[in-house]
Amino acid sequence: MRRTLTTSLLALGTVAGSLVVASPASAHGYISSPPSRQANCASGAAKNCGNVQYEPQSVEGTKGLASCDGGLSQFSALNDDSRGWPVTNVGTSTTFTWVLTARHKTSTWQYFVGGKKVAEFNDNGAQPAATVRHQVNLSGYSGKIKMLAVWNIADTPMAFYNCVDLNVGGTGGTTPANPAPANPAPANPAPAKPQPEKPVQPPAATPSAGTSKPAAGNGNTGSGAATDWKSWTAYKTGDKVTFNGVTYECRQGHTTLPGWEPPLVLALWLPVK
Figure 1 (cartoon, helix red, strand yellow):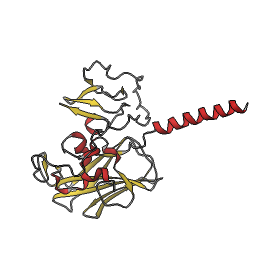
Figure 2 (figure 1 turned 90 degrees about the vertical axis):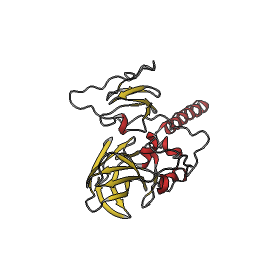
Figure 3 (figure 1 turned 120 degrees about the horizontal axis):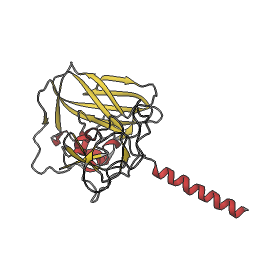
Figure 4 (figure 1 turned 180 degrees about the horizontal axis):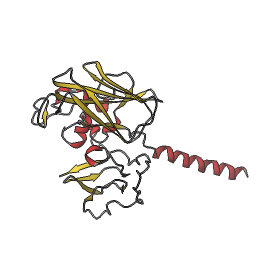
């Protein structure tokens, strides 16, 4: 009897341990629009960024910091203002879009320019949606600025950090902040073989009225041919889809949600040329 009980407890411990390992501990969220520095790294618009190109959603540090890298040395390239980050032209009222691959209960969302807080949104501990949008008034600024956006988690001492390079009152498309050298050296060289995160499963969501969620496996069949991206569809790593004329490759297996279109969730989809 004792041997049987010991064997059962060991088996239970093995299962529990596997559940812990499988949890998406490093999958969280980042600003996709206007593209944050880590979003530009993930899309390839900014080069030689180091590990953050594989996990733009993981810039997490203790609350109260004022750095783009969240105090993490592996993401220190995000702090280098001389790298020629792409700059997005925006108006005096700008919508910031976060995509969340783990929907942590939230205290506040804060936006800073030059150390001054320009906006704050209080969620009072609620769990956010898979995409979150904030309208921020930038009428007190003009020209090029660096916005620090902070997502403060309600039930931990941690926060997520994003820096977004903007040209307030600018017109046209995206322009570089500073001319980049022909072969810029990385501020924080990546390991010889950086690996992307383990696949994560997005949080469950309830389909809207009249919409049914298809069974797993309704995504790309693995034949290599790209199919049109669809919400409420299961995709696996390596699947290819097209969205607005651009082809993307799935970099993390997941089931899609409305608002998780490929250009908004670069942690899940990699543009391919």
